[in-house]
Image (cartoon, rainbow, N blue to C red):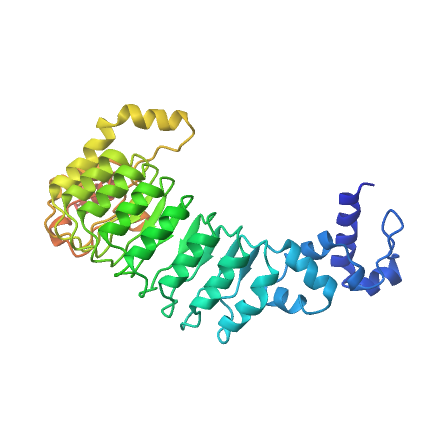
Amino acid sequence: MNETENLELFFEKLIVLGSVENINTKSGGEMDGGVIISEWKDMPVELLLRILSLVDDQTVIVASGVCHGWRDAISWGLTHLSLSWCKKNMNDLVLSIVPKLTKLQVLILRQDTPQLQDDTVQTIASYCHDLQELDLSKSFRLTDRSLYALARGCPNLIKLNISGCTAFSDIALAYLSGFCRKLKILNLCGCVKTASDRALKAIGYNCNQLQYLNLGWCDHVGDEGVKSLAYGCPDLRVLDLCGCVLITDESVIALANHCLRLRSLGLYYCQNITDRAMYSLAQSRVKNKHEVWESVKKGYKEEGLTNLNISQCTALTPPAVQLLCDSFPALHTCPDRHSLIISGCLNLTSVHCACGAAVQAHRAASSFPLAH
C-alpha cells in the first residue's frame, strides 16, 4: 500500500470511529511503514490538512493553537482563509496570524463594520506574496497606504474586492494596476474617488487580462475611461456601469466593437444612453462574426450578451431594444429567465423575447371564446 492509500485508509477510519483513541482501541493505530499514531500530535501533516478542510475557518484558527505541530502544519499548508465571521478585533487577529500563514492564496476579510487599518494590510503584503484573491470590502478606514503596500507585496493578485473603500484615491489605484497586472476580477462598487477616467486608463493599459469589473455608482467615470477599458481589456466579460451617469453611447459602442466576449452589461440609470448604443450592440454580433467564430474555435463558449440592465434608461425606444433582444437569444424578458431588465422604462413594455412573445400570443389566443 502506498503512502497516499495509507493516509486515505486512516482518514476513513478516523471519520468512522471519531478519534485517534478509538482507532487505537478498535483497529490499531499503526500505519504502513511502522508509524504509530497514538496522539493527535503524531498525525501526518497531509492528514491533518485533510481533516481541517472539512471544518470552518474559525475552527482552523482554534486548531492552530492546539500545539506547535498543528500550528506549523497549518502555517505550511493553509492556502484559503476567511475571517468574515470575526465581528470584533479582526484587525488584531489578522496581525497575529498572518505572519505565520505565508502560503495563503485566498484571504477574505469582508466586514459589516470597518475594523481593518493600514498596518494590517501592510502586514499582509509583507508576508503573503502568493496571494491571488483578497476581499477588503467595506474597509472604510483604509487609505492609499494599503494599495501601495499591496502593489509592492502582492503582484500575483487575480481577484481584488475593495468595494465601499471610499478613502482610496485614483492615483493609488493606477499605481496598483502597474504592479498587479494579472488582475482578472476587480470590484470598485461605490469607490467614487477611486474610479476615475485616469484610473481606468491605467487599468486598460496595465491589466489586459481583466474579465470582471464592477464600477457601480462610480459617478466620476466617463466615456474616456470606459473606452480605455474597451481598447485595453478585450477579454472583458462582465461590466457593471450602473449609476455611471456621465457615460454616453460612445462607451457602449467601444465595448460592442472591442469586447467580443462581453456577457453582462449593467447600464442602470445611465440616462444618456440612446438607441444608437442598442443598435451598435446588435450590429456587433453580425459585424464581428469572423472574430466571434475564431473565439469559438479557441474554446470560448459563444453566447453573446446573456444579461443586460437598462432600467431607467428612458431615452430608449422599443424598436431598438427589440432588435437587440432578437439579436441575442440569451436575453429574456419572461419572468422565469429575466435577464433583460427594463424596469422603469414604461415605453418598453412591448419588448419581448422569443419565449415571452409566445406566451403573449398564447394568452391572446386564449382570450377569444371558441366558436360553436
